[in-house]
Image (cartoon, rainbow, N blue to C red; front, side, top):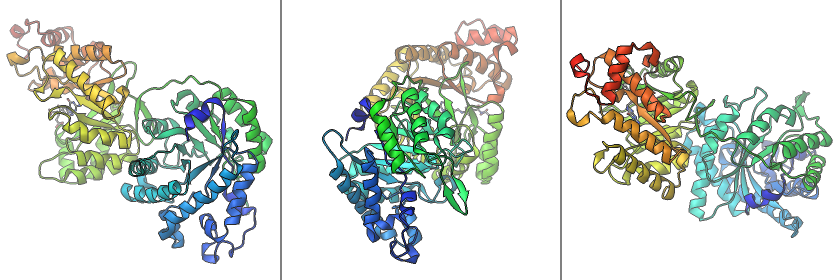
Length: 608
Ligand code: THG
């Protein structure tokens, strides 16, 4: 099913609530297969399929284009609560078969009907450590395999609470499509609670940043928790920002608790009014109803779909990284994006000591300090000879995931360490880094991880001959990396951040006198030829070997010229970067002469 083609011409209509409509059938414990199974809506697929069929046929009669399987909780994680985990695959498959049979019955040439395999959030939040990433992926895989084999036309990963949970589901879908050599569309829909974020505190912008890189996602949106009125601001955000089609499936208003039962009051007419606005004025492409919506609501929506088409959207997309909470663009005005350098065992004695004594929480507090000092993102490196880097990364990242509000740059040379970090990070990370030192070897391992977890990546201008020294060589390596990344590994230029690495100017070595200027000019060349790519520098490298004061001055002046050449991001000690006007005239001039190799500085004795 080509969802893209379908939604080009018209709005697609999902069905309404499953749970509330099953409830309204006044089912008895016997219908559920006994007292111990009462409330397990998924088991009705076996114990009373006629109840499920009735929900489907009601919505098909009401005009829904897409009906959802009764499998929201058919993963082994949820079914285990009823000791039914062993039938997760079968139940999912049977659920899809029931829906598919009815969808086919109702399908006509003019109005084909489709089945969306419903995949709920389960009852566990991986970001809170309730379940490991791999275990969660495995249960999603089983559920999705059943849905696919039962005839689902698309998957809807819905009512999502935790971005890490979504990533586990997406990893499962990727694996399943690879194994079965097939692919169906995937809609990913998050739940924004009344407080304005997902349950874990995630803003809609962070969710969009983390999910947008996934090729397999056909549409992004929101469902549940609130009615359309409360969703409006976030609907507006998505329609103004998302490169992917937008999906919106609200409840029939905010639930009101009456005697322990949720009641929903939004009438079909009111729902229609809001959705007409969302589709016609904002450009929402796929609509439906969540809790409390009935066949009357869906009849209104399918009527609406015959009258209005989604507004043609223009959207503003900003390539970004994200923490579990918020999104941070990979370019800011004024530049640069400041990446704090201190959570690095090689770059900070304090961080190294905290790691060695396993004072994890204090190590994480160094992250918070850097945010206070102005860091927009944080570089994290835990490599230490003789220690288990995978374990150390896990200990650090599972804490930083929820304790750190800015995006993380994962700094490691080891592939298993990078993957361990990505498995514990809900936001959109940046992986630091790839290069061509051993040809494509490193890219071959790291870029599939970036694709699997939706990360961006830093690429160093190093090839088989070592670290490039001239602007031309740096540029050529960047071009080669772009070509491979895009054409062979499926990355986009906007996912790549180039580091044109500088040697220190502090060695006094004749060979490296032009290191600074070559690095700066290479940035200019890359930005000119590939404006979608980003650039970054570990600024402190320029001044290794100099005294602390000279380092600060040289770092700051070097950063200034790099920014003029188009530098987007800088790995620095945020508190120690001095704005140019705070450096005295003489220091500024000397630093400039050193960087541009103007050879008048020796008599002034700065490099000593
Ligand atoms: N490019 C990319 N990644 C990188 C670098 C780069 N990661 C590591 C490094 N270079 C950037 N990080 C640092 C961290 C600390 C220092 C320099 C670069 C540093 N530290 C002080 C010192 O060593 O004297 C402070 C030591 C302390 O506090 O104990 O200079 O270039 N992509």
